[in-house]
Image 1: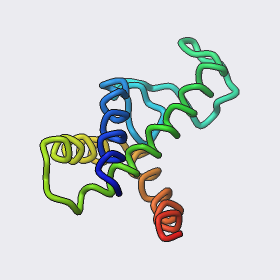
Image 2: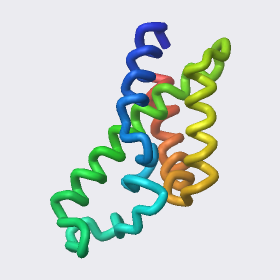
Image 3: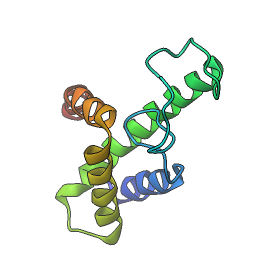
Image 4: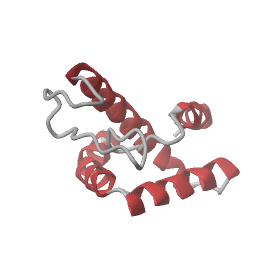
Length: 113
């Protein structure tokens, strides 16, 4: 990965809402919306908003995966911040763990091309 791409990915990561999960649609740890049924309205969220949250999660997922490439390089404060946030996501959210592992094979295939 080229250095400027590292900076671009990191700036995208920092642009995420602070409480949002990187690998699932949750907007915070307290978000209890059922994103598994996006077409069903809930008291606090319309189907349209659910779909927007799901799309935003896909974008966060992609950026977080791309930034993971820098983990093999010399450790910078930005990389340490990424590692801490990644660790938090993967320790606190079963959906993030699932999506991280399920997306890994396709992402590694993309990298090898």
